[in-house]
Image (tube, rainbow, N blue to C red; front, side, top):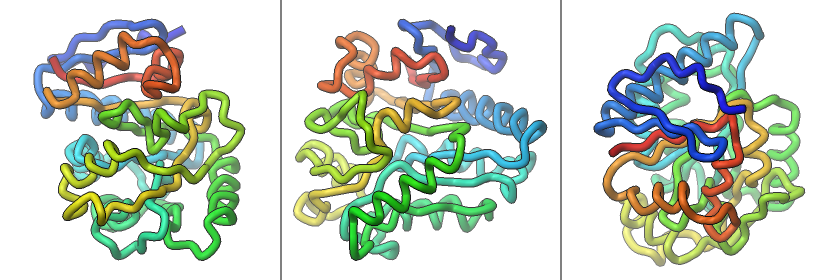
Length: 257
């Protein structure tokens, strides 16, 4: 059953769509405050009863304010928190401004000093071995919280509609990015043009995401209206991967009116 103990409503309202909890805020700042307040309370409750917690972080513009709220909070003991991330471009170095390692190292790791941050190495010399290495690291941990955004084509992490598999046996896989996703990275300001965006990427798979004890998905702003509508109304199918969230009782979708 969905978790219906939702004490931090602030100015948000909450509804249920299938098994998914949807929290609707009036603005992106309110959404960010709601999501970060809930995340901090949840992580504090875990740290009170277990030695460490593990989080998979998302990147992108939807996460910036949320990550900033976590970074400025003084109540979490980050020395007991283990971090992973959802995806990374193939063949890109950690110093490239468009890489997710660069983003997370500068915006999260250097500010928070977690116990450890396990990075997907986009420029690993043997990509399939890198998939195995990161899969092994993820399988050694119970993932307490997975953070997500939703791509314009409905992808979660880089699970594109063309390759999303709700029964994927893999933990990490290599995929070819769709043109709409590559253009979204340009629109976000991470690359100068579509030719500069890598064509392939590593991604955590859908079953790995769904194995997390708690999932927070942030999709605020008017530019996400159609994405949220499709997530909540389309048939649950890989053709719009985010629809799988409606089968996850542990998931919360944070959106704006």
